Length: 189
Image (tube, rainbow, N blue to C red):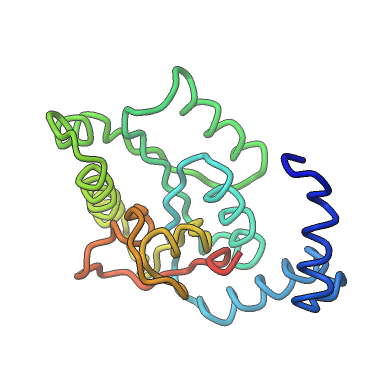
């Protein structure tokens, strides 16, 4: 919409130059992802770091569809949300029938971020704190599920690119000695 004949330009690039067929159906992706999740997880318990945003919420719904009660969604109140947003997140997941646990770690996050100005340092602090909070709450889970998207991977220097644009807390912000294996059904989207 921002370019003259933008839709025609995109159509020509995707359909003619790249020769992509317009036959992809999201429903197919859902069923394929559910099967892959079941295969990856098996009988393991999975903990999902739920922010309440679109990415982690879609991942939660998809993983819950695949493994049901093997999934525990952990909503970490980090103290950085809008007023009443945490309650809204909890209500949405209760309505969907997805179990959710809430951890109030706001003091922990706010204290760790106090006086930190550099955005990259903040992202690393936030990523490490999320993992620490999840590890403290883990129970028997050995797997961590996240709503990581492909742009998160690319921004963090992964994918086919090599430049680290910014560390995403799901990717570049994760500690190297993390004790979880990852379940990321949206990573290639």
